[in-house]
Length: 411
Image (cartoon, rainbow, N blue to C red; front, side, top):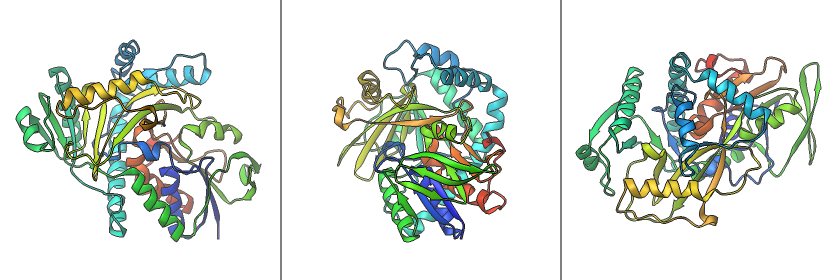
């Protein structure tokens, strides 16, 4: 039986482990943390086929420069002397054009829809993670934003997604959980959401049932490579023989890739969230508050708010209160009856989303190291795209045709 070693115990790594174990492989997962936190846990829990436009898009650089001068803005690049940042910025600039977006949209849409199908397979096993298909409301307060959001909605319709364009009254009729102060919204009926922590508990239980070995608190230090093939993984807990390696460690992927003499351009996009427990009055439908780029997700009896994208580095572990205040301000402007207060520091979660300069995930067999498969760089879409990514990883390693065309997800 072939041994597959997965480096990274986030949602991408665990979904890859699940589908590989189902294929009959002997699977081991390695993660330096205790696997109870990270991007897979504190995110907005949205499954979003509607998100078909990559981060690298026309206008993003101009908008980003404007936001750089606002400490509460939704997007920020932390200035520092770094070749990684400089190279990433140059590549981002090269990708932020109409041609790239046109090629990216069908690829992201098909990957997203496939992933949603696989989530529906999971709920046949159990819906302990509160999967709900209520769609996603894109709420806006200005005519300028309305124009942009309507344009995106029309693009989504071209790919067969069901979209409703709502007036202020239409939003009030649909969102009955609390009042909204908006001029309108776009409702993507194709979208769904889950409770991320509960899904991680579910998938870990499935992996346990499938006899997947989980090596948490285990740091991968190096590799033994012979004839362009990884034969051994060297960790602080000793060496492990392997037949296949999957690199799925999100924002830490470039660091591990360097040990394999590979270069991957990924920078962490730091985001914040906080969760209010057992809330009676709350929005009933997941939403993006467009002007502030804040995500709002009801999760069973709780509600989670998240936002901001700070392009930074993985040692940046300080909570930027101004950014969190920006999230709180947006919530109170859009939902005046909620009266949300600034969360305490210990109640504020942060995580690093792995951002590629193209805005596209990397899901591919490595061209140089024969038994290395890459599954990383999903940015804000990790949870949404995890089952599809995991399934494709298992297909790549099994030598099968992939369920979705992966041409746009190459390095």
